[in-house]
Amino acid sequence: EIMVKKVSAVGRRINEQHGLPIYAAAFNQVDETNLDLFATVGSNFVNVYRIEDLQAQADSGATGTSTSATAESVEPSAAMTGEEVPSKKSKRKRAASTVDVHITALQVYEDEDESERFYTLDWGIYAAGSCTALLAIAGELRHIKVLDCHHGHVLSVLQGHGSAIHEVRFHPVQRQLLLSASQDESVRLWDFLARDCIAIFAGDQGHLDAVLSLDVRADGKLFASCGVDGTIKVWDLESDLLKARVEAVAIDPCNEISPSSQPAPPEHAPLPLFEQFPLCTVDHIHVEQKVDETKRLRFYVDCVRWVGPMILSRAADERAVLWQPAVSSARPMNESYRTPLGTSVDMLTSDRASTSSLAAMDDAMRGGSELGNMPSHVTGYVPSGAAAGDAACATCGDGSSGDGSGGDGSGAAHDKKMVKVLREFRIDHSNIWFLRFQMDLNRTTIALGNVRGQVGVWSLDEPSRALAMLSLRRAEKNAQPVTVRFVALSSDRRHAVCCCDDGAFVVCRIGSRS
Image 1 (cartoon, one colour):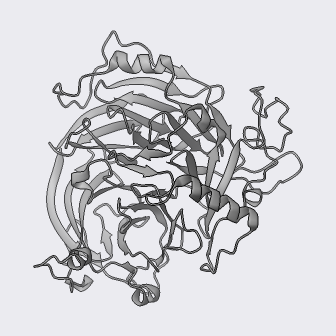
Image 2 (spheres, helix red, strand yellow; image 1 turned 90 degrees about the vertical axis):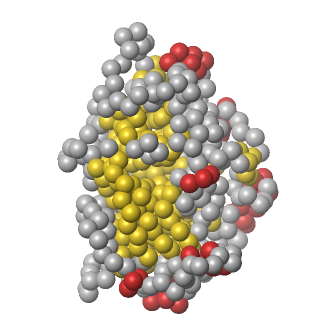
C-alpha cells in the first residue's frame, strides 16, 4: 500500500527516513499535469515529492507567497529534515539557489521485505492521454513493481530476471511496454498490463557481464544498453517477430486491470522471443590507453541516454561522451523527434536546427576552436580522435583493420567510422561506477556528480562553459564529502535533484547563467 503523508521543507538538503544511499531519482516527464513531481529510491523505500519554485512564482507576479523563507525555518520531522548549507561559491552566485525551492512529500512506498534495495525507477502513464501516473521500480530482489500512484496500489509485479535489476524504462510510444536491464546479463521487454515477458535480449552477441543501464530512443524503434563489459549495444525493437509478439499479448488499456501482487501467467502464453544479435556493438568509446599493441582496458559503462539519433554514455573513466552510431540509418529518425509529452523538438535544442548545430559542433572540433576557461575539475569536449581513437573498430575496439573479422567472432564487416564522437564532458573524481543522471525533457542538458560532492551542469549545445558548478557540503564540522550518486534534471532545466550516498538529496535551482 502507498502511504500518503504531508511534510514540507524549504531548504537545500532533505534527509530521507532510511539513511542509506539514494540510487536514483526521476522527474515526471510523461504527464504534463504533474511535471513538478519527482521520485527517489533508496533502501526499500520510494518517495514522491512535489517541487514548488517560489522564486519563479515571484518573478511571474504570483502573490501571497513569501520568497524570504530560509532553511532555518524548516521544522524537523520523523520522515525528513531540511538544512541550508550553502558553499562560498553558491553564496556569491544566485544561479545555483536553493532557498526559494519548496519541497512537499506526497507519497511513500515501503516494501514489506526490508532486504530489498531499490536501484532504479521510471515514470509512466496508464495509456496515452491518461492522467494515471505510474512508477516502475526494481532492485536487488529481481522483480519489477509497477505502482499506480493515482489509486495507491501495486498494479503489476513482473518476475523473471535471475539477478538484481539496475534500470527500468517505459517505452515512449507503446505505453504498456517496459524494458529492464539486469545483472544476469540480459535485457527483458515486458507488457506490464498483460504481466508477460515478451522478449529477452541476451546470448551469443549480448552482454558478457551485468547490464547497468538502458534507454529507448524517442521514436521507440531502437534501444541502447551498456554494462560492466564496457560495451554499448544498440538493439532493434521493430522486427516483424517482435511486433507480432507484442500484438499477441496486448490488453486493451481501457479494460479494468485488477491489482495483483503475484499474477499467474496465462497457460497459453508463448515463450519469450530470444534475441541474441544487436544491430551494433561499440566498445571503444570508454577505454584506457593501450596496455600493449593488442589489448585495451575497458571501463564500466553505467549510464546511456539517447539524444535524438545520438547516444550520450558515461563510464568510470570520468567522461560522458556524446556520439552518433551509424546504425541509426537502419531505423532513421526525422529531423525532429517527439518528447514523451508529444512535443516536437529539434535533435539537440528546441530553438536551433539540429543539422546546423551538429555541423558547427564538428567544425569547431576539427578546427580546434577555443573553449574558454573551465573550472579546474571540469573539461569540455575534445576532438573525436583524442576522445576515442578513430583507428578503433566500432565492434572490435582493438584497432583492427576492419577486414571483416570482428574481435567478437561475429565475422561481420566493420567500419572504422561507424561511430562519430561529437562531444566529451569530464568531471574529475568520478572514477567509480553507478554514477548516473536523468536529462531534461528536451535532452539538451546534462548534470554529473562525483565522490567529492560536486555537480557540473552543461548544455549540450553550448559546451564552452558550465551552466552551473555546485558544491554540496554537509552541516557537520569537518564532515567528509559525500558521493553524489545520481543527478536528475527537471523538465524545464530549472532544478537539479542530487542524490547522495548518505541517504539525503539536495534540490538546487539552476539559473540561465553561472
